[in-house]
Length: 151
Image (cartoon, rainbow, N blue to C red; front, side, top):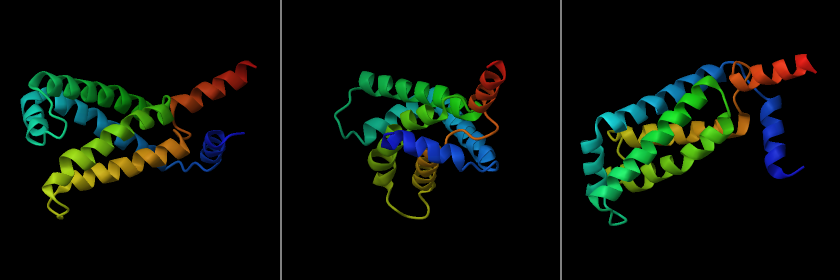
């Protein structure tokens, strides 16, 4: 049994039911962030070009924002319903790391930079749900129960 399977097994055995409420809220937050990125594309593109670390052109910035928005929409929905939660959390982690280190940190570590602190909290929650999984009130658990009943 490799390390990933050991972590997943430990997470499956140590689930708290109240974490499902946190998982659903996290999924909805990520989903609505994806909607905000799409609905306010010009401001997001301006923010990305303002902190232009990689020399993005306007087209590349627009493409990056659409990819991030798509991952947020799909990943947030999957986390909310509890379907392949670990995978959905893992695909969000690089986006949050980039948001923290390349976008939000440029505004400083002040208490007024709420976007930075929100990104850090979301990143920590994503790591938590990567370890503990989806929980008892999820589509994953429901599908496992149905599979056991059929066997």
